[in-house]
Length: 218
Ligand code: AMP
Image (cartoon, rainbow, N blue to C red; front, side):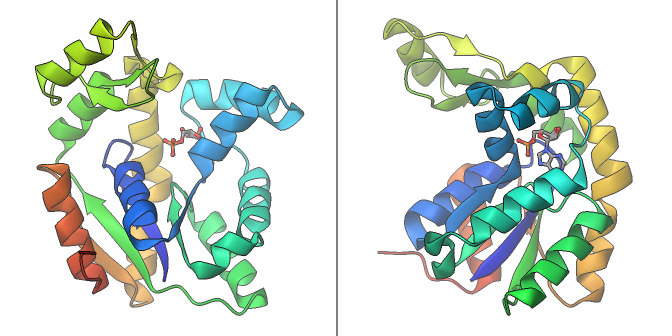
C-alpha cells in the first residue's frame, strides 16, 4: 500500500505511521525525521533547514521533493510506504503526483488524522522525548509511571526545538493556510479517508486499519 498521512502537527501522524511500519511492514517516510537527521549530521542541507524548522516554517519544496524522490527509490520502499508530513502544500502534492506517475506508482489513500484544536495544543506543548530511550512521552497524557521511569533511569524529558509556544502557533497557522487545502485536493481525487484521531493510540490505530481495510496482525 502507498499511503499519505495528513493532519495538523500533533495529530499523531508520526506515531501511527510508525505503528504501520512495525506491524504492517510499510516503510515510514517522514520528511520531518529526514530533515532532523540532516540537521543532527550538520550537512549543508541541515544547516539551511535548521533556522526554517526552528521558526516552524516550511523548508523549500525543491529540498523535500528531492528527499522524497531519493527515499522512494530505495529498495525497501518497494514493499509500500506511508508518507508522514509530506506533502505539506499543493505544489508538493503536484510534485509527488508527477514523481509517482514517472515511477508508475499509485496512491491508495490519503488519511486525515482529525483531532480537536485544544487537544492538538496540549499534545504539542506537552510532548517530551526521553533522552535515554528516545521514547516520546507527554506530560499531560502519559502515565506518571512512564514519566517517572525515564527520570529514574537517569534520562531527561527533552522538548523538541520546535515545540515551544511561539513556533507551535506558527506551525499550526502554516498548517491551516498551506496544508489543510490538501484535504479537498485528495477528496476530489477520491483518495481521502478520515480518522477520528483523539483518544488512546491503540483505538486510533484500530480506526486507521479499518479505513485502510487492513487486518490487525495476530
Ligand atoms: P514534522 O516533524 O513533520 O512536524 O516537521 C518538522 C518541521 O520540518 C516542519 O515544521 C517544517 O519546518 C519541516 N518540514 C517537514 N516536512 C516538510 C515538508 N513536507 N515541507 C516543508 N517543510 C517540512
